[in-house]
Amino acid sequence: MPVIMNSKPKVLVTRRWPAAVEAQLAERFDTEFNRTDTPLTSAEFRSALARFDAILPTVTDKLGAEALDVSAPQTRLLANYGVGYSHIDADAVRTHGITVSNTPDVLSECTADIAMTLMLMVARRAGEGERELRAGEWTGWRPTHLVGAKVSGKVLGIVGFGRIGQAMAQRAHHGFGMKILVQNRSAVPQDVLDRYGATQVETLDAMLPQCDFVSLHCPGGAANRHLINSRRLDLMKPDAFLINTARGEVVDEHALAQALMFDCIGGAALDVFDGEPRIAPVLLDCDNLVMLPHLGSATRETREAMGMRVLDNLVDYFEGRDPRDKVL
Ligand code: DGY
Image (cartoon, rainbow, N blue to C red; front, side, top):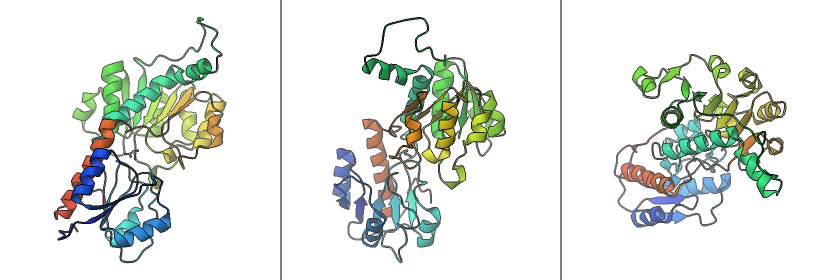
């Protein structure tokens, strides 16, 4: 339940944030910043839960059952800096009656931009080309050199048709004339599908064989762990591409590496990894794979907007309202 406090609430920021947002936080709250800019350990979290009214975690803070194994925490709000919150144990926060908020909307456009970047890079073999050039191995233009796949007019399957999935559809359909197929856990209203010339397909298994590109925009967490596994990779066309800007655990990376090595699919492009920042070594051997270090929301404008959105949620909560982006 939201609370009104007489003194400034004590707030912990777990990583470095854009300076403008840090300044506002420091002004409005009794704020402590983790200046080491490294993820807190479970023990550090347990200690913080006893001392702070709100904690502002990110995707790198693993707030599982171990980190939340405390009795009677002081913390009432986890205002997450990011839209995905599968790193927070929903059962544990419910047990403690802790409220959780996230930062939707503000990062949808930039995350879709990175998904488009990855789709173009892998289809046009841009990563391979750059590696070749930097290694001094480019011998000049020739008709058969690094020939990739055309993107315009192809079929894109979008898994998860929330804000980011729709921003992807907007770019792909209106910018590249792609045909959009959609797989979503609930029925998408027809007027929303019509905006992107999209068709909802009943099951993922039915959609995969029809796609030239598959882009993942669903939440992570246990429910979607290894949604893309070896069986589903087998359902994809041999020249299709997989793009993941959602969460690493959605893809079975070992099955993906096998599929890439044996040319069961054309290629893949990942911005997120299971257990990141550790990268499964088997992925590093795949030439037809583009990898980025979780850059989806990484623009100055977006990272600042995310911080401001966290601030809005804090203000809501400590002025006695439900945070506008309450998710748990
Ligand atoms: C998000 O907002 O979910 C990004 O992946 C960073 O956490």
